[in-house]
Length: 333
Image (cartoon, rainbow, N blue to C red; front, side, top):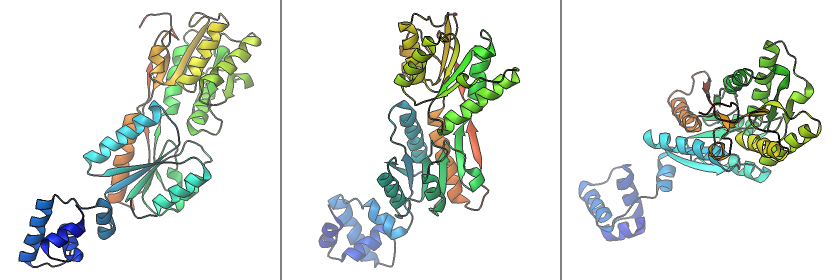
């Protein structure tokens, strides 16, 4: 049923129905009662978009994600959506990767359909950051710290996760035998983990060699490529901290092909605690990331920003957790 049907049944104009449904303007009591009776009898449900345009407040939050698939973004979105519902908001999602999609993101930010926006920025030099800064609507940045530029940010404590993983690996392996195999050099998480890796080794009195820190992409193929190259150089031994579980699994697969045994000859720790970490054998040690909590925290931060737009921008970090399994220790957990 449409608003036209209600107006016809009640014998009033569409404008009168709109005023009654949205509680705007003055309508005679008898007329209003007639409209409400028609609404109930016909089972009419107001168009939420029309209500947004009429009231100026949508109670809708937007979230823009990179076009990534898998558990990482799914859990983030799930946590955000659940928290938004608890706080009485709806969530609209869009994905942004290409130039045209970034243009679409600008359209969403300036459309008036949303009260505020969450944006996942994974690259330290992402040009979308300037669009976010210029959007003029309350915004929370996820995964990259832009608090110094006036935007609330929620990020993972990459430094703590890296330190915990390395402290674990360095119980058995000397600092010059540990490697970091990350994702893209410009990726915020990868860059922070590499920096923390370097700091830990320097703290142990070792300046990392160039070959101890490598960048690629977040894929099984990159892990296999790195491990194959290291085996050809006779260096596939010691311990590896991988930028995510896919890279770690690629390394373990290549090591098995090369008859380099995990964890006896090579200890491996990943990041994410994805399902794959529990399916491979030996099971993969990994740094668990609270993605559901990250999404929920972003929503709470955004709602607080709506309530107090003049408060200073903050950056909140969520703790990670090291999960030790067989890939990094001979003990059976």
